[in-house]
Length: 600
Picture 1 (cartoon, rainbow, N blue to C red):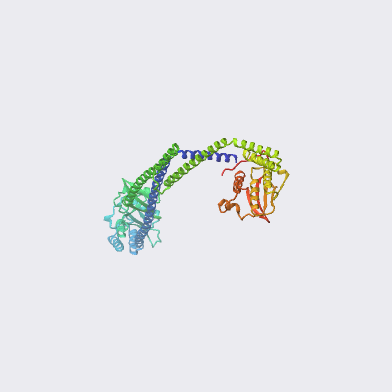
Picture 2: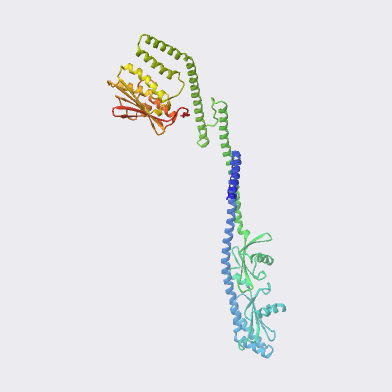
C-alpha cells in the first residue's frame, strides 16, 4: 500500500511539473502547437484512411478474383474430365481390345491391325475438340498408332510417362512437367478386359491444346484479368499474355504460399491469386496488372494529397491570421493594463469595442473596471478629505467640552447657593450625560454604566414632566458587568417617552428589562400609550415611514449592532397589550473580551 501511495505521489508531482511547464509556455506557442498537432492528426488520419482504402480494395479484388477462379477451375476440370471419358472410351473399345490382343498373340502388327486401331482413334477423337493428337503405343511391339507425325517424345519422356501411369496403376493421369511440347498430356494404360485387366495391352497418350480450350471458354483473359494454368514447378501451361515463363514462375513462387500477393516483376506489379487443383499436378494462377488498375487509385490518392496540402496551407494561414488577431487583442489589453497601472487617471484602450467575441468582452469589462476603480478612488479620496476635515474640527472643538463643564459647574454652584435642589440635580445629571457622550472615547459600556446613563436622562425628564413619568428597571445582577455598545438603551427610552407624551396619558410608564437567554443578552424597552406599525424596521430602511424626533435613530442602533456582531443580532419591534416594545439581541460579553467589527 505504501509503495502504491508513493507511486501515486511521484506521478502527481510529475503531472504538476508538466502542467507548470505548459502553463509557462507563451500563448502563441501553445496555439501553434495545437494547430500543428491538428494538422498532424489530419494527415495521419488521411494516411490511415488511404491504407484502409487500399486494403479494402485489395480484399474486394481478391474476392472477385477468387469467385472467378472458382468458376474457371470448375469449368476447366469439367472439360478435362471429358478427355478422361475419351480415354475410358478408347480403353473399352471392343475392336481396339481385340486388335491389341491379336497383336500381342501374333507378336507382330499387320496392316489391317494398324488401320483398324487408327480408324477407331479417329472416330472417337472426332467427337472432341482441342486435341492435338491421340497416340496408342502397343505394349508388345512398341508400335505407335494414331497421329504419330505429331508425336515428339524422347525415350526419357516416354520413361516418365510409363512411370506416371504405373504410379496411377494404369488409371488416367495428367502430366504437365514437359513445357510447351507436351503441355497437358492425359495418359493411361489399356488393359485386357477379357483377362480382367491383368495384361497391359498398350499405353494411351492424349495431348490437349489447353490454350485453345481456355480461349474458347473465355477465361484465358477477361477484361484486365489473366488466367494461367501452371504446373507444379510454375511453368505456364496456357497462354501467359505479356508475361514470360520466368516471370510466371516468379509470381507463382510468391503467390502459392499467400492468400494473395502483389508481385513485382521487372518494375511491373501484378495482383496474383493462386489455387491448386486437388489431386492434380497443375494449378490456376489468376493475375491482373495491378499498376494499370491501381492507376486510378493513385490518381485519387494524388488528388487527396493535393487537397490535403491545400488544407494544411489553409490551416496554417488561418492559424497565422487568428493567432495574430488574438495575440494583438491580448497585447493591446496588456498595454492598457500597464498604462492604467502607471496613471490610473488616464485610462487607455487601443482596441475598438465593436467586436463581439471574448476579447471584445474583456475590453468592455476592463473599461468598466477602470471606471469603477477611478470612481472608488475618487470616493475614497473624498472620504479621506472628510475624515481629515473632521479631525481638524475635532481638534478645534476640544476646548468646548471643558468650557461647557465649567459653565455647568458654575450653574450648579449658583443653584446650590440659592438652595434650588431640583436645578442642581438637573445640572449634575446633564453634566454626567455630556461627560459620557462627549468626552468618553470608549465605544462600549457595561450594562450598569449604560443604565446609569439612562437614569440620569430619566431624572431630567421627570423634573421636566413634574412626576408624570414612571420608570422601572429589572436586570439580572450577573449581567451588570456585561459589555454592550454605548448609547443603545437611552435612545429607545427617549423614543418611548416621546411617543407616550403624544397620547396625553396622566402617567407615562417606561419599563427596561435586561435578561439572559443562553449566551445572549436580551434588552427590552417598553412604553405605554403607543404601538409600533407592522414591519417597522424595514419600512424605516426603505423610507416608507419617516422617523420623527432628534438624536440617535432606531436604524442607527440596528446598523451598529449588526456591523459589530453580525446579521444574527439587532433590534426588532412588537406590541404587547397596551405597551409598545423594542427588543435588542446581543451576544453575551464581559469586560476584556475582544470584539471584531464586521465591515460591510
